[in-house]
Amino acid sequence: MLKNLLKNVQRPELDFSSLKKPRKPNTYLMSPPDYCQYIPKTISPIFEVSMAELAKSFEAIALAEPRTEKLGSREIGKELQVDYVQYSKLIGYPDTITVRFIDLGNGSSTLAVFSRAHYGYRDFGVNEARIKDWMRKLDLALKNGSNKA
Image (tube, rainbow, N blue to C red):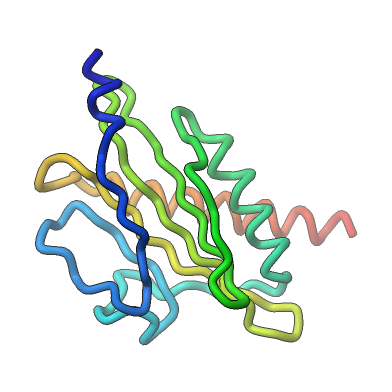
């Protein structure tokens, strides 16, 4: 019952270009430099794969995680933005993860990721740990994929 109530959170569309530092520290931002209105905690790496391949690989990583679902996606110009939700194990608190895939041209791409809790004030590093783990898995998957070619 509580998990069903927690699922009904407000998720306004995220615009990375106007994203400002939230008042609560229960978020984590990784992005290219000067992509948002506040400095990201981590600068996004550049990948030597197309934006479509990066998005496909990231989605495979995200959806392989427990209690994670895709909420939706939309094209923004030449970029792709996707929203995911991951629920905490015990109570089912939802964290929303928004990812913008950015085509850099010449077969390279990058991404911006904003992960945030909807309940509480602190997240005890959960959002940061999640994204760092997903990025480690993404890097490994892309390296293994390129080794197979």
